[in-house]
Image 1 (cartoon, rainbow, N blue to C red):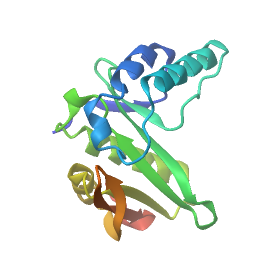
Image 2 (image 1 turned 60 degrees about the vertical axis):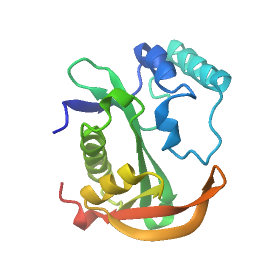
Image 3 (image 1 turned 180 degrees about the horizontal axis):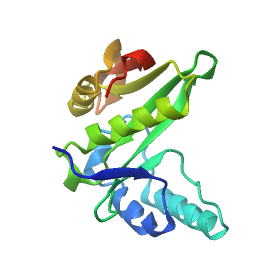
Length: 181
């Protein structure tokens, strides 16, 4: 169902496209944690310029996580990330965003997150569990989590506010021994 994708680090040649695809008016911002403060266009431009300076100074790994790209033409599709929820208990959280809307509904999120979760488990043999947290207004992310075999572990009722309406925060998880994709 999905197209041929790969995960890789952000590159200097991506920066103009990254800026365009992450502009504040892009559709994905309505679903990707819209209850958090968003970057303004000026802040986004400054961030991209900072990335550019770091690349020019020789840095290569300037942005956490990886970019999701079309393996056929190297076009940016989105990004995946991870962070420690509890280093002491070997629990990480993962995240994904498909910011290039022309790839929505094509199985990209499933393919990318499947690769990313496998990569994290393979590269970090001590990690016991991976979690993913979304909100009840993002039905596609909830379906994706379940399609990947993650279990719904927690619902924090009325934990997110958007446009004066309350939504639940929903947490999913998968244990290493459950990961079979």
